[in-house]
Amino acid sequence: MKKRVFSFITVVAVICIFSACSNEKTENNRQSSKVDTNAVLEKVTTTENSSNDVVTTVNTDNVEDTSKDESVEVTLEGMNTKASLLSKTENMALIEMLDIGKLPMPGYAFIISSDKSKNYNVPDEFDIDDFEKRTNEYINLKENEYLKIDIKELEWFSIICDDQSIYSVVVNQTQPNTVGIGPKTILQSNYGQEVYDALKAKISDDMSFDDIYDSCKSVITN
Image (cartoon, rainbow, N blue to C red; front, side):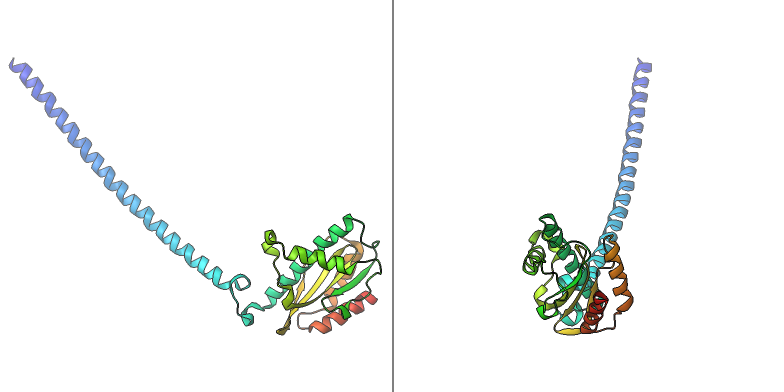
Protein backbone atom coordinates (compact mmCIF):
# COMPACT_ATOMS: atom_id res chain seq x y z
CA MET A 1 0.00 0.00 0.00
CA LYS A 2 2.83 2.40 0.93
CA LYS A 3 4.56 1.55 -2.34
CA ARG A 4 1.42 2.39 -4.30
CA VAL A 5 1.02 5.74 -2.49
CA PHE A 6 4.68 6.53 -3.10
CA SER A 7 4.34 5.62 -6.76
CA PHE A 8 1.25 7.80 -7.10
CA ILE A 9 3.01 10.74 -5.46
CA THR A 10 5.98 10.25 -7.77
CA VAL A 11 3.76 10.25 -10.86
CA VAL A 12 1.97 13.43 -9.70
CA ALA A 13 5.31 15.14 -9.06
CA VAL A 14 6.59 14.23 -12.52
CA ILE A 15 3.40 15.54 -14.10
CA CYS A 16 3.69 18.82 -12.19
CA ILE A 17 7.34 19.24 -13.13
CA PHE A 18 6.56 18.48 -16.80
CA SER A 19 3.63 20.91 -16.74
CA ALA A 20 5.74 23.64 -15.17
CA CYS A 21 8.48 23.14 -17.75
CA SER A 22 5.93 23.17 -20.52
CA ASN A 23 4.38 26.39 -19.22
CA GLU A 24 7.79 27.99 -18.86
CA LYS A 25 8.69 26.94 -22.40
CA THR A 26 5.39 28.27 -23.72
CA GLU A 27 5.89 31.56 -21.90
CA ASN A 28 9.43 31.82 -23.27
CA ASN A 29 8.10 31.16 -26.76
CA ARG A 30 5.48 33.83 -26.25
CA GLN A 31 8.11 36.30 -25.10
CA SER A 32 10.31 35.34 -28.03
CA SER A 33 7.39 35.69 -30.41
CA LYS A 34 6.52 39.01 -28.87
CA VAL A 35 10.04 40.31 -29.40
CA ASP A 36 10.11 39.02 -32.98
CA THR A 37 6.70 40.54 -33.67
CA ASN A 38 7.81 43.89 -32.28
CA ALA A 39 10.94 43.73 -34.41
CA VAL A 40 8.88 42.96 -37.49
CA LEU A 41 6.39 45.70 -36.68
CA GLU A 42 9.25 48.15 -36.17
CA LYS A 43 10.73 47.11 -39.51
CA VAL A 44 7.37 47.41 -41.27
CA THR A 45 6.78 50.83 -39.72
CA THR A 46 10.21 51.95 -40.82
CA THR A 47 9.55 50.60 -44.33
CA GLU A 48 6.17 52.30 -44.48
CA ASN A 49 7.65 55.59 -43.36
CA SER A 50 10.44 55.21 -45.89
CA SER A 51 7.93 54.28 -48.58
CA ASN A 52 5.74 57.24 -47.72
CA ASP A 53 8.74 59.52 -47.95
CA VAL A 54 9.45 58.20 -51.43
CA VAL A 55 5.85 58.58 -52.54
CA THR A 56 5.76 62.11 -51.19
CA THR A 57 8.96 62.94 -53.05
CA VAL A 58 7.65 61.42 -56.28
CA ASN A 59 4.34 63.24 -55.99
CA THR A 60 6.16 66.49 -55.37
CA ASP A 61 8.38 66.02 -58.39
CA ASN A 62 5.59 64.82 -60.66
CA VAL A 63 4.91 68.28 -61.98
CA GLU A 64 3.00 67.30 -65.05
CA ASP A 65 0.28 65.49 -63.07
CA THR A 66 -0.03 67.57 -59.91
CA SER A 67 1.47 71.01 -60.37
CA LYS A 68 -0.50 73.93 -61.71
CA ASP A 69 2.46 76.27 -61.66
CA GLU A 70 3.37 76.84 -65.31
CA SER A 71 6.84 78.11 -64.46
CA VAL A 72 7.58 74.65 -62.97
CA GLU A 73 5.51 72.58 -65.37
CA VAL A 74 7.08 73.94 -68.56
CA THR A 75 10.43 72.17 -68.33
CA LEU A 76 12.44 70.89 -71.27
CA GLU A 77 11.83 67.29 -70.23
CA GLY A 78 8.11 67.93 -69.80
CA MET A 79 7.80 69.59 -73.19
CA ASN A 80 9.78 66.80 -74.88
CA THR A 81 7.32 64.34 -73.37
CA LYS A 82 4.38 66.33 -74.74
CA ALA A 83 5.98 66.33 -78.20
CA SER A 84 6.48 62.55 -78.06
CA LEU A 85 2.88 61.99 -76.94
CA LEU A 86 1.57 64.22 -79.70
CA SER A 87 3.55 62.19 -82.24
CA LYS A 88 2.17 58.98 -80.73
CA THR A 89 -1.45 60.09 -81.06
CA GLU A 90 -0.81 61.26 -84.62
CA ASN A 91 0.52 57.81 -85.46
CA MET A 92 -2.66 56.24 -84.08
CA ALA A 93 -4.66 58.47 -86.40
CA LEU A 94 -2.40 57.64 -89.36
CA ILE A 95 -2.81 53.89 -88.75
CA GLU A 96 -6.58 54.31 -89.00
CA MET A 97 -6.26 56.36 -92.17
CA LEU A 98 -3.90 53.79 -93.69
CA ASP A 99 -6.35 50.99 -92.95
CA ILE A 100 -9.10 52.73 -94.91
CA GLY A 101 -6.83 53.82 -97.78
CA LYS A 102 -6.74 57.54 -96.94
CA LEU A 103 -2.95 58.04 -97.13
CA PRO A 104 -0.83 58.89 -100.19
CA MET A 105 1.67 56.40 -101.59
CA PRO A 106 4.96 56.29 -99.60
CA GLY A 107 7.77 58.64 -100.58
CA TYR A 108 6.37 61.87 -99.13
CA ALA A 109 7.29 64.20 -96.27
CA PHE A 110 5.29 67.24 -95.18
CA ILE A 111 4.49 69.50 -92.24
CA ILE A 112 1.17 69.74 -90.40
CA SER A 113 0.87 72.61 -87.90
CA SER A 114 -1.55 74.11 -85.39
CA ASP A 115 -0.94 77.29 -87.39
CA LYS A 116 -2.40 76.32 -90.76
CA SER A 117 -0.23 78.91 -92.51
CA LYS A 118 2.74 76.70 -91.58
CA ASN A 119 1.35 73.58 -93.27
CA TYR A 120 3.95 72.75 -95.89
CA ASN A 121 4.25 70.36 -98.82
CA VAL A 122 1.00 68.56 -97.90
CA PRO A 123 -0.17 66.23 -100.70
CA ASP A 124 -3.53 67.14 -102.22
CA GLU A 125 -4.92 63.70 -101.39
CA PHE A 126 -4.11 64.00 -97.68
CA ASP A 127 -7.22 64.89 -95.66
CA ILE A 128 -5.91 67.34 -93.03
CA ASP A 129 -9.28 67.78 -91.32
CA ASP A 130 -9.79 64.04 -90.94
CA PHE A 131 -6.24 63.62 -89.62
CA GLU A 132 -6.68 66.35 -86.99
CA LYS A 133 -10.10 65.03 -85.97
CA ARG A 134 -8.76 61.51 -85.40
CA THR A 135 -5.71 62.83 -83.55
CA ASN A 136 -7.85 64.95 -81.22
CA GLU A 137 -10.15 62.00 -80.54
CA TYR A 138 -7.20 59.94 -79.32
CA ILE A 139 -5.87 62.81 -77.23
CA ASN A 140 -9.23 63.22 -75.51
CA LEU A 141 -9.97 59.53 -74.84
CA LYS A 142 -10.54 59.09 -71.09
CA GLU A 143 -9.20 55.53 -71.11
CA ASN A 144 -5.91 56.82 -72.53
CA GLU A 145 -5.05 59.05 -69.57
CA TYR A 146 -1.33 58.57 -70.18
CA LEU A 147 -1.76 60.27 -73.57
CA LYS A 148 -3.44 63.33 -72.12
CA ILE A 149 -2.17 66.59 -73.67
CA ASP A 150 -3.75 70.01 -73.31
CA ILE A 151 -3.37 70.70 -77.00
CA LYS A 152 -5.09 74.09 -76.72
CA GLU A 153 -2.16 75.45 -74.71
CA LEU A 154 0.37 74.36 -77.31
CA GLU A 155 1.63 75.64 -80.61
CA TRP A 156 2.93 72.69 -82.57
CA PHE A 157 3.94 71.20 -85.88
CA SER A 158 4.77 67.66 -86.99
CA ILE A 159 6.66 66.04 -89.83
CA ILE A 160 4.61 63.30 -91.49
CA CYS A 161 6.74 60.96 -93.57
CA ASP A 162 5.83 57.62 -95.15
CA ASP A 163 2.69 56.92 -93.13
CA GLN A 164 4.06 58.00 -89.76
CA SER A 165 4.67 61.05 -87.61
CA ILE A 166 8.45 61.09 -87.24
CA TYR A 167 9.02 64.48 -85.59
CA SER A 168 6.82 66.71 -83.45
CA VAL A 169 7.76 70.11 -82.04
CA VAL A 170 5.68 71.84 -79.36
CA VAL A 171 5.86 75.06 -77.37
CA ASN A 172 3.65 76.48 -74.63
CA GLN A 173 2.42 79.86 -75.83
CA THR A 174 2.99 81.42 -72.39
CA GLN A 175 6.62 80.25 -72.25
CA PRO A 176 7.98 80.18 -75.81
CA ASN A 177 11.61 79.75 -74.74
CA THR A 178 11.15 76.07 -73.85
CA VAL A 179 10.59 74.00 -76.97
CA GLY A 180 9.78 70.28 -76.84
CA ILE A 181 10.91 67.82 -79.51
CA GLY A 182 10.00 64.13 -79.89
CA PRO A 183 9.99 61.21 -80.28
CA LYS A 184 13.48 59.91 -79.57
CA THR A 185 13.11 57.00 -82.00
CA ILE A 186 10.82 56.10 -84.89
CA LEU A 187 9.50 52.95 -86.53
CA GLN A 188 11.65 51.33 -89.20
CA SER A 189 11.34 53.20 -92.50
CA ASN A 190 14.09 53.82 -95.04
CA TYR A 191 12.95 57.26 -96.20
CA GLY A 192 11.52 58.15 -92.79
CA GLN A 193 14.80 57.30 -91.06
CA GLU A 194 16.74 59.33 -93.60
CA VAL A 195 14.60 62.42 -92.98
CA TYR A 196 14.60 61.86 -89.21
CA ASP A 197 18.42 61.61 -89.08
CA ALA A 198 18.75 64.77 -91.18
CA LEU A 199 16.43 66.63 -88.81
CA LYS A 200 18.31 65.51 -85.69
CA ALA A 201 21.62 66.54 -87.23
CA LYS A 202 20.35 70.01 -88.04
CA ILE A 203 18.36 70.88 -84.91
CA SER A 204 19.55 71.64 -81.37
CA ASP A 205 17.75 72.29 -78.06
CA ASP A 206 18.75 75.94 -77.95
CA MET A 207 16.90 76.80 -81.18
CA SER A 208 13.62 78.71 -81.13
CA PHE A 209 10.35 77.20 -82.31
CA ASP A 210 10.43 79.20 -85.55
CA ASP A 211 14.09 78.37 -86.22
CA ILE A 212 13.32 74.67 -85.81
CA TYR A 213 10.40 75.04 -88.21
CA ASP A 214 12.61 76.69 -90.83
CA SER A 215 15.21 73.93 -90.45
CA CYS A 216 12.57 71.21 -90.83
CA LYS A 217 11.20 72.95 -93.88
CA SER A 218 14.66 73.09 -95.47
CA VAL A 219 15.27 69.38 -94.83
CA ILE A 220 12.00 68.43 -96.50
CA THR A 221 12.66 70.76 -99.43
CA ASN A 222 16.04 69.17 -100.09
